[in-house]
Length: 252
Image 1 (cartoon, rainbow, N blue to C red):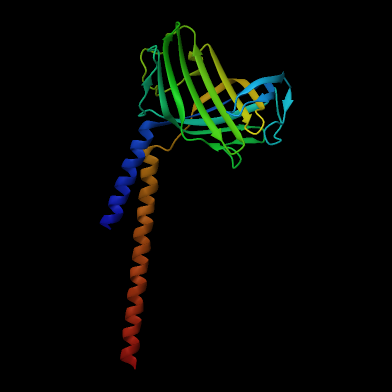
Image 2 (tube, rainbow, N blue to C red):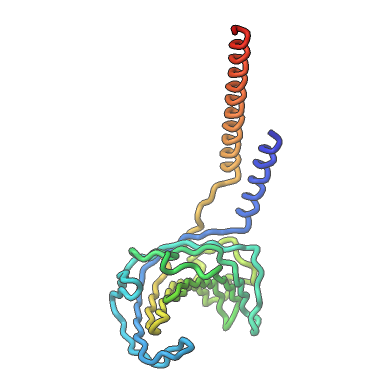
């Protein structure tokens, strides 16, 4: 019984700590630009020195999944407010290299991460304070596989430079505080150097709801009661079998 109580206590403590440091936002918007770069000269180190560029309204470059201008994209990201940062050489940008602990994206039937293109570790989050008079909230996530590489950005830009006064990761982000809100994802095929770049505007950004500690406590309490009842039933069952066996022995 004491072990169960200790488990419930520590489970609630861990949940409360994680809830305090991890913040999840849901986002969505529309694609406004597509650029396809057909590599003509691909170097051995992975660079493309020349390409034929086009700007299609629809492309199925990545794995045959068609995406078009005007398509709706959506997803979510989670960042850790307890992450540490490195300051840029000019002193205006704090880079939290591993702050993005989760990133999910969907554009029509294209879903990332996937078995074809998985997350390449944690993503980065940057806070820019008053660089050239502007503030930025900028996150970057990488995806990788044997033949593909992709990187996705969300760039919230405040040209007035009044949102941030320092480099602490904010506990809340409001689209209305920014002048423009950009989304971008680029796909690179390693085998030939071809690329597809997709850009769009983020029109929706809302903090995702998470269970409150009270809700978890209610769940754990219910679980505790069920465990007690289960233990009681098992004890009564074992006891009744013992009585039955004793009676049978006396009858014999």
